[in-house]
Image (cartoon, rainbow, N blue to C red; front, side, top):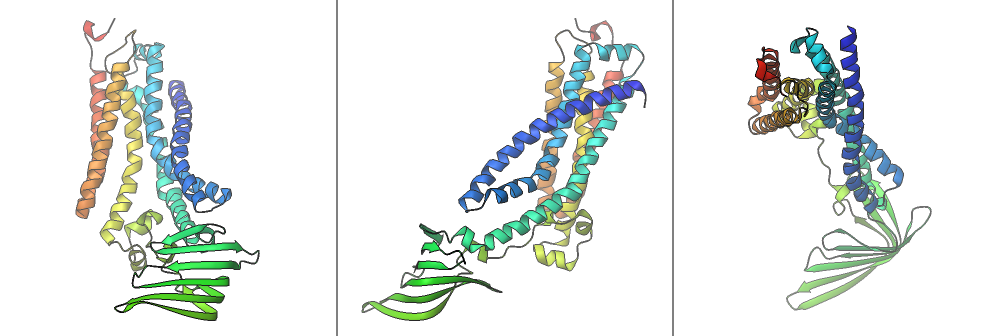
Length: 373
């Protein structure tokens, strides 16, 4: 690679590292704060919170990298123009097409990073996150069975536990089940155990009493039953008791392109929806070189100016917003009609044509008015 290409590429990579670090930090902290509150409210430890926030990092990076690439090329080109280095390169005979070569290499490098993330790390992290979420949702003791406070795991259900012994026994338990207004039951027990079964967690009450209030036409009827051992099914009561299907985003791209019956049953989706998700992943890295080239090509329009190229920066941002708008619109259309999946590649095609058009305009010979004062 010629020295001039190494210089431009090194500048872009340095700026890219800075912008990526800043944007990822801001985006990640914003997502981590809401996750932090949710997990701590469920009684989770700091290690669980740290694990969950780390698993969200690949997704955050994949979203931020194209924006960081655009910011790096726009700022880098503005810096080259402000220090007259870009003018010197053009005066040496380097055309805009030739100057765009290291920027294109930079954009393809960022696209390769995004591809590794969206095809590898993000699905792995999402699958792990889904598994850990299921484990925590099924952990009734950590989620709802907290001593010394009234809990409301479901509408019409009140739960209170005085204390939890070191061996896991629940001491002095109180449950009010008023989900059926015509039949309200209050359970009290000296001790209780949480037993996991194939159908969900079961609460085994020991040395207790059940008071049932039944509303009849003749008036309320109260019955009291004392028991030595009583099993109370809480699998359907707690949020963790309901099983949810897996998400298509938890699976690898190759498996989504050729979905098998196990994948379709686990997700409850169709084969067309799985292939749409795969094509979305394939199209996503293509926007990284487009963003990089757009930030460079737009700033070449207008020539040198002592006042900088901030007007071109504004047009570059508008172009990036247009590409993102097309990407969102294409995703919405494909969501309505899965047969339109080729539309997912339209934003990248439009962006490539736009960058080529801008480079063509920049390479046209200018008259005396082309150089601003």
